[in-house]
Length: 114
Length: 120
Image 1 (cartoon, each protein chain N blue to C red):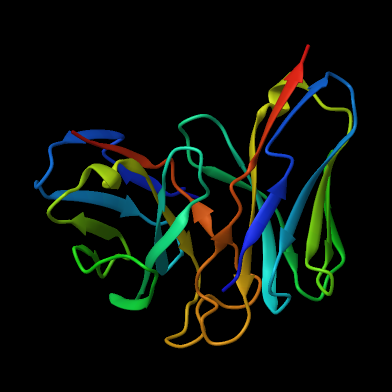
Image 2 (cartoon, one colour; image 1 turned 60 degrees about the horizontal axis):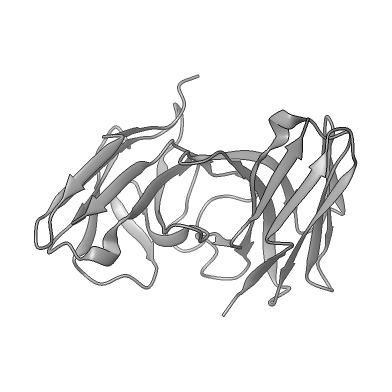
């Protein structure tokens, strides 16, 4: 059974700092990995999708890496801003016959202080 | 391009009642997945619908059921509500599921804003 863990559970940083969020998964046979942002009480906004054959994806100040063999992904946020404050979730889609669902971690609650 | 929409935004029910939640998929998408997110937890997969048929199911009891319509919109029905059913219910749409393999390679799932269900 796939399990996804995100560390840390919460993170508070001053504005302008670069930061890294971590995601680990127990079964390396994944199809892809997706990072989401969730504002309080809201739905999920897709940030980056990394296919199993890729090593990283970039979008603006965000960079996500994937090391499938070790079951790890990181989300790097450069020059953080107060507007980045949210919960960040990673989710993996498994390979094989049951690859229709996403398995999520519990998320990292990020607070960027002005 | 129209995004994923869900209705209602909030809902309050009492134990034992039944509820129907609705989702309209993103324009051009034909696959809808439903997730339950309890407070402080990550979303949990309930089931997925592709072309009006269930394409996969998570570890939820039969009182959780769904429908997909010809326009690819979807409903989630929950019977005999329990207190633990209180959660944010999220709908996600994507393109091109197959009967066995799920969404085609590379296709992201795009989520709606969710319905907050409170069971008293």
